[in-house]
Length: 454
Image (cartoon, rainbow, N blue to C red):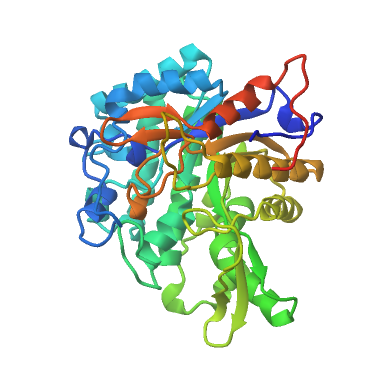
């Protein structure tokens, strides 16, 4: 099984950026060397994490980071996307924790020495617990605390960073954390989701203003996740159901960032669910972007339901990942082309794309053919979107390592590198070897492997 594309694809150009991605809480460990986060508290709450685990050790990247950077280097990727742990680098008074900053400066310096572009995400869900105790993302002040954190951190990093993303997937922070309650901080209240989302987007805008001042030479943007919404049938009722779901879960986040207004859905919300929008907020949110990060994994299908307006329709007969997510590469193309038609977008990085599989080690190897096929299928779907005019300049595989998969604990493996959590041994899976081989073929005199059925 190989990753293969048409030999003329822009994705085969040496200028196209390929990388791998991780996040701080999912891999670092080193919990005693930082302040508690909302995910520490969530993990300590019985019944919240599937296997009862936590991120106290995770992949022990806090101690093994040099080994992990050598591993990344061996793959031949162009870039490494990782996140900063807010509780590790700033103390409760908002001042720098020098030891925490030095940890990341070591990573940044080593990446630059190796010629690997550092893509830094400033917030990947691990809010300091002391800020949650004051209301977290339901408290408008948290947006300003985030601005101040970004200010001190970017000054400390100086010229070491290639790209900054303010937030990773504000939908997950707001909806999963404050409305559905299945992610930290675990609050489940329908009136909370849009309010938390507004403060997250405000934090993004405030941080972009800081980045424009402190780090004008980096590529600065935001990472949004999208689950394209399809109607179950071609009926007008089902199409409207899919449109309403899209407004809630996708458009609510991209439209204010790109245009400075929320979807028309806001007028239909009960007053208890509407965010409090103060004068000037939407202008702050609508900052110019150097790039947009797009995370894609799967699609969703909806039908009209009189009681709930829209209802999710399981695709029982479709191929699925170990997360139960449908494998549907065409939606990747459809999503990107649709965003391109609806908005004037900056260049796009695919900042996450990947698959959880029930991997097994056999004779020192992991033959994860389904993951390799997934990458090949989705890179071909990306190729199709680029041919239709979408400006995509890079792609990051999610994820580098098997890791703590949030509410699923360590039960789900997304990595192109297998991690034995008992020994912390890393083993590059067949998918990782295929990804590396594909990347390193670019620019060779021999052609990239021709497109083949996956």
